[in-house]
Image 1: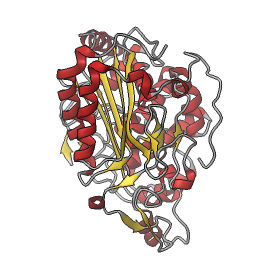
Image 2: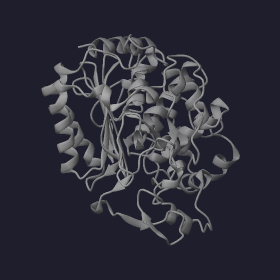
Image 3: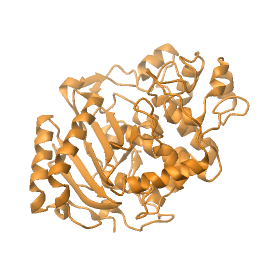
Image 4: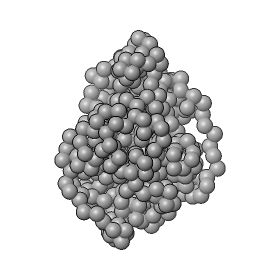
Length: 430
């Protein structure tokens, strides 16, 4: 639990100015889902066009060797890397195996679970709704005037301090919830005396009946549960199921047509989804989340992935994630799906102790970052201050867990120093 520095409320004008300043600074589930027609944006399906051959560049053989060495060091089966500069996709390549048993090489067209990078997608959805005047991040979540004011929530809440929680508090992990139970299905089944795995309503009842651990906005504690509530808010305000709204109103307008809510088991995989692998040090085998008593590989049945929803359930390719980032970064080269004011709010930086909206951190000196970790997955999105964005997702988790992203960050910095000026001048988005 970390102390949050007191902040001053900024006006909309200040947000707009901040967006301009940031843009200037950065210039330096069981069956495949049919691809829908886009509402707007580019009519190009990236994952149908990209291949490793397009990024087999002699000048970048050293980059390939460094990535391969990194994977070997951490015993990773496969990884996918995308590099964007000034909203142009310069490089997209897969390394190692998408499925080792099937001898299927990793390609940039493969999709992977992105874990908590999903939170960036959810935050973008909230900002789209705010731009439409459907909500404000200052709106309260619970209570008579709250967004989630139906009987399920009203009957569960006993602590009136819940009525102080705002949408922004959820986005910044400042809600004050006493626990984060989304990865504890078996414990929740026992605690609530359920004879089947808990659904989201069970998690709502379990958490909301307890007193808050701290007053909303006064501290921070990372909360997947808070982003499950944000997913519910999106459903309530938009009138659409969460996945439908995100696909139709966020991803397709951004040019992302091959992102999906992932499944929990190998049999649930999407047509071009990779196979996941768990390092022995990560606790390879665990009891199935359903409480069946069956031992399963942690990455296949250890957790209820779809239940994570906007907190961590999305899967996609790094190239399409780059396309989403290009659509919410305030740069002029790709039309944003959110307003300059919304970009400014998402990327406003206070200090290292305060989460940004959807992003982990938006330090102007270090760049913007978004990490993600699940069993079988490690993901990092790093948007550097010079406008270059590196994205890597692996299909293998390591014993370092969330700490693996720091190793990937170091890899990015080393590779940028050696190979940034050798990247081709092109745009694979087009």
